[in-house]
Image (tube, rainbow, N blue to C red; front, top):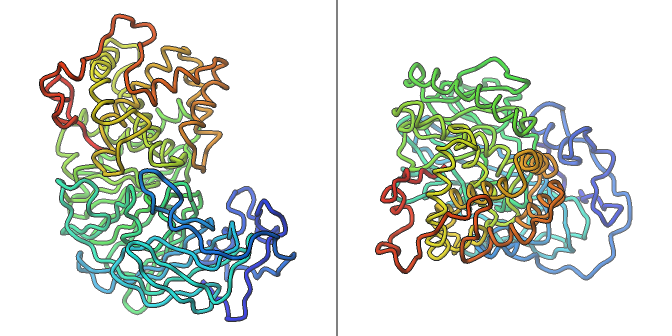
Length: 542
C-alpha cells in the first residue's frame, strides 16, 4: 500500500451521514471508499486513487479523545469510540518456517472519524511495536494495558477519512491448552500456527478496533519462507516467489469482525475443490494428514446445499475447513475458513458432522450477521445449534421434541446459575459460551416456531440473515423483526424467553415442567457437568 506523504490531508466528507466520496465507490459492494484501497493493497490495481477534499469540515464540538471502549457491558474496554474502521490491510512476515515463529506485522487501517478527535485508541496487547503514523505523519503513542493510545500530529475532523499505520508489531504464538477455553488466540502445533481470536483476543495479535459491531473488509500480504503455505480468510488474489520467499495476497471483500480473522501458516496443504453453487471451496490441512481428512471434509458440500435451501444465498465468496493438529477444546467459525481440531475427525461422521454443520451455520449467524454486543451471542450459538440439531433430526421428530423437553427441564437451573439467555453473567469464556447460549438459544427458537408456526418461522430466519447481511444486529432487532415478519406481536413473548429469570410455558406443551433449582441436589455444580448427568450429550463449544 502506498504511504501518504506528510502533507497529505484526509478527505473532508461532504455530508453528516459520512457516506464515502463517489470517486471511490465500488459497485455493487457496500465497501465504498475502502474497496479501492483494498484492491490496491492486494495488487489488483496498481495504486489506490487519490481523493481531493470536497467540502468544509463538518460543524460540531471541538476535538476531544475518543472513548477507550464502545460501552459493551460484558467488555467495557473492548472496541473504541470516535471512529469506524472500514478496512484493514495486514502485512505479515514469518521469518522462518519454525511453527513457534513470532510474526512481524504492519497494519494499515482505513477509518472515518465519527467525532472530532484529538486522540484515539486501538486495542493491542501484542509483544511490541515500532512506530505509529496517522495519514503518513508520525503520531505520538503510549500503551495503557490493552489500549494503544494515539495522538495524531493534528486533530482529526468529524467526517474525515484517515489512515492509521502501526509498524512492526510483534506477536508470538503459544501452545493451546484445551483446559483454558479460547486461551491461545495465536497458537502453534507441530505443523504450523493459526489464529483463534474469539471473543476478545484478536488484539492479542494485531492492533484493531476489536469489537464485532465494527466489521470491516480485510486484505492480507503474507510473507513466508519458500515451501511454507500461508492462508487467510477470504480469497487468494495473487501469489509469487521472490528471494526464496513466497508472497501470498488475500482479500476478504465482505465485512468481517476482528474476532473472526483467520491466518494459518506452516506445513499445510490446500485441498482445492470444484466451485460449488457459485462458492469457491478450499480446505486446509496438515500435509501429513491430507489423505485422512480430504474425504471427510467433503461433507461440507452437502451441508452447504442443505443450509442454502433454508437460509438462501451463502453470504461469502468462499468457504472451507482448516484443521489443526492441536487439542483446542473447541471449533471456531473463523470467517470463510472454519477452524477444527484434528481430534474431532477421529470419531465417526455422526459426531463430527453436526460440528461441521454448526460452524457452517455460523457463517450466516455470527459471521455475516454479527452480534451488536456480546450479550447477543445467543443469536450466534442458538441459531447454529438449531440448524445443527435439525440437520440430525427433523424439527417435528420425536427425537428433537424429546431433546427440547429435556432442555426445557433445565431452563430454570440455567437461568439461575448462568443468567437469562440474552444476559450472560460475564464475558469470561465459559460464562459467555455457556449451555444457555447454545441450548437456551436453541430452546428460544423451538418456542418461537411453536408460537408462530413453521412457515412464519422460516420466513423470519431468512429475513434475519437477509436484512442484516454484512452488519451487526441486536437481540432487540431480532425481536422486532420476528414480530414484523410473522405478522404477530411476539415482543412480550420473546422478551420473557430471552430476558426472563424463569422459564416461560412452552407453547403446545403445557405439561412440560422445569426442575426447581433449589430442589436439585447438584444445582450448584457447573452447568456443563449437569448435561451428561441428565442424559444429554456434553457441551462441545463450537
